[in-house]
Length: 414
Image 1 (cartoon, helix red, strand yellow):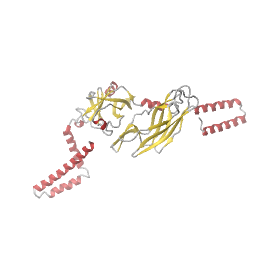
Image 2 (tube, helix red, strand yellow):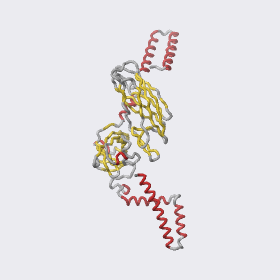
Image 3 (tube, one colour):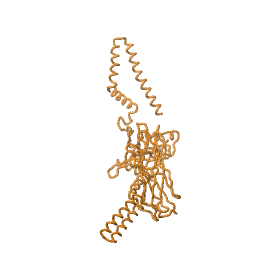
């Protein structure tokens, strides 16, 4: 359906052309050609999906369609498109430590139905080093399927309306909403791809994580739960050094500690991830569905991908034949050097000693130590017992202070 402005522009164009051709006497054939062109333009404007863009303070939103029309009984994909303000983000289906996912509430013509969103691969978003959420930044397309009734009349367009809500955050979070609508032409046969948004929705759907038949289990591994994934395709990519940056995004928010490190071990049969459990998995293991995200080499470039897995509880971890470890934490593979974990407690003590030496040379610490040493020198001519008592008190104060700090940290972690 043409808007008022489009109709007025078309009418003014017709008048100007008609006046020019009548005055110049170019004849009826030229006028007929122009009329055909105008009719074709009208068909173009009325035969494609139309929606109004809604702008909130932080998000630009609209409904878009993958197809130019819809036929009776047909299922097509439409999407909620969001352009999110720079440095702000909205959330995945499981928001992580904080946040809420985008939701949509439909008001459709009778007989129409809609699915839920199909969620693209999220990113880990950490705020302040202590809160990790899962979500999206920049441009986002959230596809969903709609189905028309089999007895839908053909000819008149249909309009779908919806209220969409989301939480958008930077360092603070703001709840926002938008009233959206999408008008679709109807046709007796399936329509062509939408020229504006068809390709974008199709590509988004192609990239959405799907089940891939990977065998996956979840088991106990000391204080961690271990998600093990075995598959020939992953094993081949690992062997070719074409696999990295694995991360598990659970569907349920109480399964794991989202802010904790995920230690990834790669092997000849697949990979495993040692993850700190949250309260949902501390007492008893349960099936744990989610998305395994990773990067793989494609045409010489690293590409982000994801697959759905459903880790089944197992009494013992699946064997992946560990050949190394990756992640931001120190490597845990055997024979990986002094800081690989093979040094045990002794390695940690030596590392702490070296760190302490470096700390004592810092400008904010060294003068304090110098003053304390000067005090010892001043007492050097006193009794040896007094000097020994001062030294022991100083040592007890240092060890006691750090023991208290350690106890507090252990308590907070627990």
